[in-house]
Length: 82
Image (cartoon, rainbow, N blue to C red; front, side):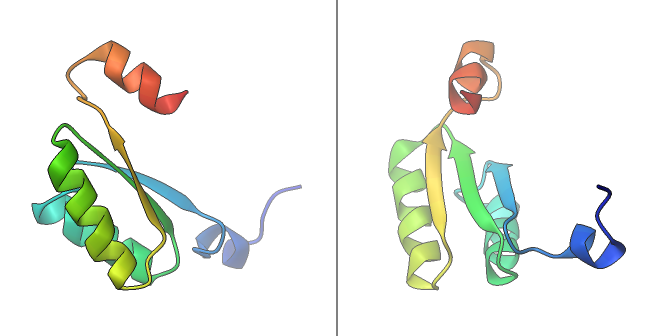
């Protein structure tokens, strides 16, 4: 069944994986999508910054989790997707 236009544009039950989501534009994007009700998964190389970003997002009542990954390393991305 094809979703209606309203169903296709709703943010309920959506998940966004944002690379580089632990700082800068990635974090802003994560925050805005999270405020719209999207579940956030941020991926980045720096584990400490990932943790800090998730804590910050969760403090704003945004459901967020993190995956340590380097988009320049294929095995890292494959592990993140699995």
